[in-house]
Length: 66
Image 1 (tube, rainbow, N blue to C red):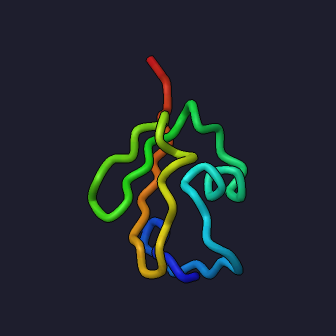
Image 2: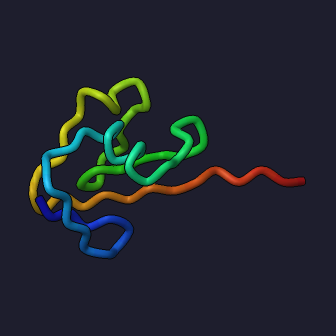
């Protein structure tokens, strides 16, 4: 399966959910936002939203500061 992740093409051997992708990337799901094909994916849906070949995924990190 091929997806575009933050502008770069990535290939995965099997189909992934958003939760699987976050795990593969070793990201803290509490500190990111995920967009799939221009739609925000609520964090409560990460394990039920599956990615398809050609999907465009954007992941952004929340950064604190002051």
